[in-house]
Image (cartoon, rainbow, N blue to C red; front, side):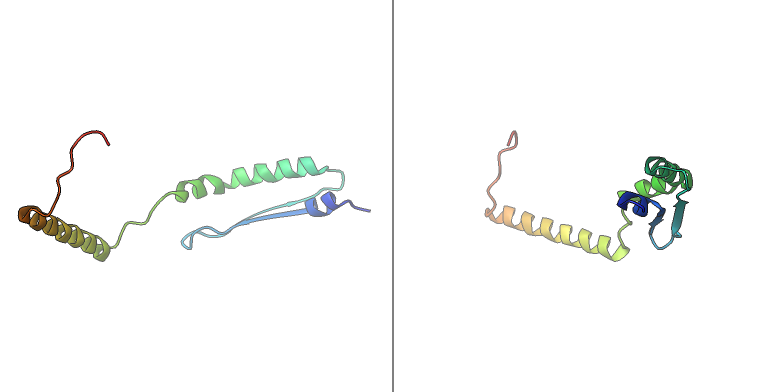
Length: 103
């Protein structure tokens, strides 16, 4: 009779779904008859490393898409509008100047 660990370790399937422009990567490891669970996990980790999935995922982790032209244009217009409002308020004397220095 198999233990719960052996049942779980009998077949490891590791599937990573990457971003849509990349394909799915399957890493499959089957347990041999005279293999313990630790060696199975070790073999599985080695296959994952050999597949080269982890470096790709890590490189994509913090990468941001470039903003669209419309978003950048709106952000620039908003910044210019706020700057014009500030300059107008400054000329009217409604802005209290902050001291420059340590906060």
